[in-house]
Amino acid sequence: MRAALLLLLAAAPAAAEIPRAVVILESPIAPLPGQAPEAAPPRFVLLEDGQVFVGGTHGLATAKLTSAEMKDFDRRLSELRKNPALAGVITIGPGTAVRRLILRKGRPLEAKIEGDLDAATPGLKPLADMVRALETFHHPGLRPYTPTFFALSARDGTLPGGCRKWIKFESLEDAKFAPRVVTASEYPTWPTGVAPASVCAGDKRYVVTLRPLLPGETP
Image (cartoon, rainbow, N blue to C red; front, side, top):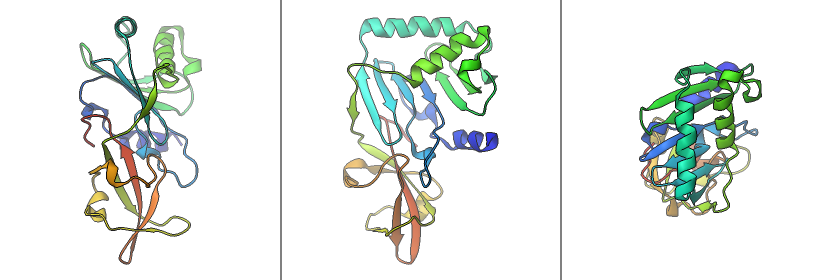
């Protein structure tokens, strides 16, 4: 199980490719049968202008923080950066959960956080509290975010039921090796995020996912 979670996190979208992001948290998702957890957006992203994105299993919500809220974030991040353990792999407690936290404002930091947040030692409790706050982040201004683009990925396979006939321009064979950026408006009725679609192209069958992209993000 631990190896599978590490592999899942490694296969997640590269957070470093989200422009203007100052805080990024990626958290593993426990998928239902047939779902594709690697197609979920990041759990939390804060941009330098105060726009925040909260990811779920299928899409994103967004809000704009006030200046006071941004100052509070800066204060908490400054305190967090004082922890010398905040880099590399951090075992915060027992368990198989794996998260990735990236801080870009000031000196860039990236940490892979392993284990149960509730089991954090006193020295790591501020880190656990921050990660928990980001995972459960709520803001009264949050509204559904309509992405402009998706990252389309494909793999060989079939799903129960029928399949959608592939009439798009993009090559599904190419999408097996690297995600393809597609215009979201061309896929208004397709499942997104962890929900895959069964697609037939000629005599081949594919499992296709559409991961919502943040502004300027490249897969």
